[in-house]
Image (cartoon, rainbow, N blue to C red; front, side, top):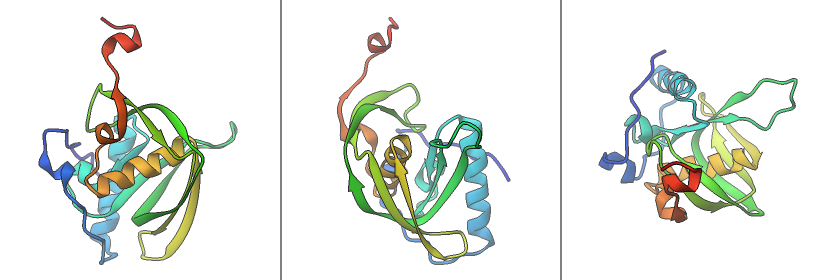
Length: 163
């Protein structure tokens, strides 16, 4: 496994539409493993293929909504699509490709995703709160949509008590 460089907002790859994964092979497994390692090192909670310069429909999300005695875990989504959205949450959102930038974004409070695993098997997964926000944010990346485009307003340093 290797830590990959995270593409920042200046790179046009972030505005492009990602292609579906059609080959479920060792190369895909290496990409997913590298993305997990990269996400862990970054301190983020979600990462999409374009953020590491790969225009493929792959996403890693850390499930943080776990009971106190349980460990957070990775959710690998290959060719994901949101099939259900419920409720609403509005709050600050950031992105590893926009370091230090945050905006107020409204997302569903619950999302259900249909995807494939690293071996091509279809499955569905549901997420609430931060996990639902991550699903939507990362799948937006696959479609070339960046969070500032969804933000009702971007936050300034003084919004955090910084000058």
